[in-house]
Amino acid sequence: MRPDEGTVYIDGEVVNDVPPEDREIGFVFQNYALFPHMTLWGNTVYGPTVKGWNPETVRRLAKEMLAMVHLTGREDSYPHELSGGMQQRAALARALASGAKLLLLDEPLAALHARLRAELRYELKRLAEDLGLTVIHVTHDQEEAMTLSDRIIILRRGCVEQAGTPEEIYFNPKTPFVANFIGEANFFEGYVLKRAREGLYVTIRGDLILQASGGEFQEGERVALAVKPEFISVEPPAPGDVNLIPGRIEHIRFIGSFIRYEVRLINEDLTSVRVTVESKPHLKVGDKVSLSFDPARIHVFPYPREGLLEATKVE
Image (cartoon, rainbow, N blue to C red):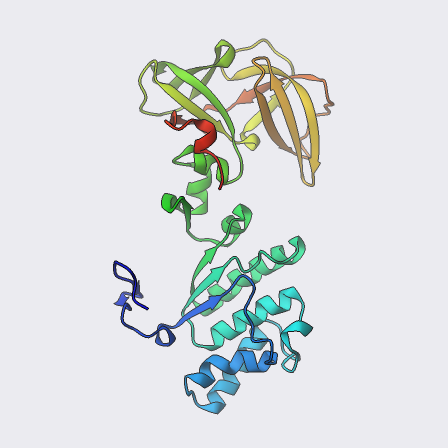
C-alpha cells in the first residue's frame, strides 16, 4: 500500500515502493497478535521461514532471539499458555527474528499490570540498545515515554505539540498542554504587571504577584503560568510577598516516596505540592503554610484563545 501523500524514508532510503516484507520493520501490536495455533517456536520462526531463509540460519536466529527475551525452554508452549509478559516478549522475539532494524510498538505494555510494565520498560530499552535498533514506541503513559525514550514527540489532534529529549520536554514545555501532559502542572491566570531585568512580574487572582524569569511579553498582556508541584516549596506561615503565598493545607496524600499536599491559597486557588518523604515537613490538614515559587521554574505562556481548560485537555 502506497502512502496517500509524501515520501517515507528508512535509513535514508525511499521505501514507498518497497514491499512491506522487505522493509525490515517489526510491528508489535497492543494485543501482541501472536498466531494462536502456533507454538512459541512456530511464531518466532514464521517471518524468516516465509522469507525463504536457510533453515539452519532460521533455527540459530530463533534460539538467539528467544534467549534474548528469556523464553528459552518455552518453545513448545502455545500463546494461551504464556503469561501476559511472556506473550509480550514472544511478540518481540517474532519481530526481531524477522530481521527488523526498525521496531514499531503500539502500546505494547498497556495490557500488563504495573509491576510487570515497569520491569519490561527496562528490558525493551536494553534490547534496543544491544541490537542497535531504532524503535518508535506509541504510548499514552508519560512515565513510560520518559523512561524509554531518547527523544519524545507529543502529538495532539494530529499535530506535533513539541519534540525533544525527555529533559527538554519536562523542563521547557512549549505549550500549556505539554506542561500539563508530561507530569502535571499548577496553572494560574494573570496579567503582566511589569517587565524587569530579573524577569516578568505577573498579577494573578487576589492581586497576588508571581515573578517568572524570561519571556517576551508586554505589560498588560494576559498570560497563563504553569509550575510543577515538585518545584514549589512548603514554608512556615509568613506574610504574603512576591513568590511567597500563604495558604492552608486541605488534603495530604502519601504516594510512596512522595507526599502530595493540596493547599488552598488565600486567593482560593487550589495548588498541588509534591515533596519527598525524607524532606516532608511535619504537617497536617488545616495547617497554615506559605508556598514558595522558584522564578526559574515558572513557565509563562500566552493565554490560549480557546481558554486554559480547553488548551490543557487530554483527549
